[in-house]
Image (cartoon, rainbow, N blue to C red; front, side, top):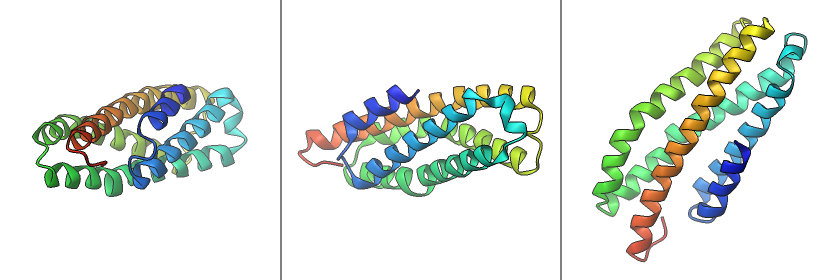
Length: 156
């Protein structure tokens, strides 16, 4: 998963400071996830890593919804990017569903319901698959919007 994040940053790094910062946050999220994946059975005794991961997770999904997506949509509207807006209408419902599952995971752990390592390992696996899908959807959205603006001689 980390490799795809690095590829995204190489492709769109510098496009916009907001996106750059967000892609860095994505890498932090992936690293924190990888740490959990290495030792899910040890998390029952060490909640600190899980809390740190949940904090990064909530920060990442919040930045997407309250900063990055709004900016991308505003740019698409400013450049009359109908293709980008149509893509957003298609992609956002799935991203929102993944966001909700990420927030549910966080809430589940906040309640202390992540003490069983088998349950936690399964939830982490499901979350990892959802995040991977989300990253691909986000990359697609960034790529379409960036390429549309690049053709007009303007960097998004």
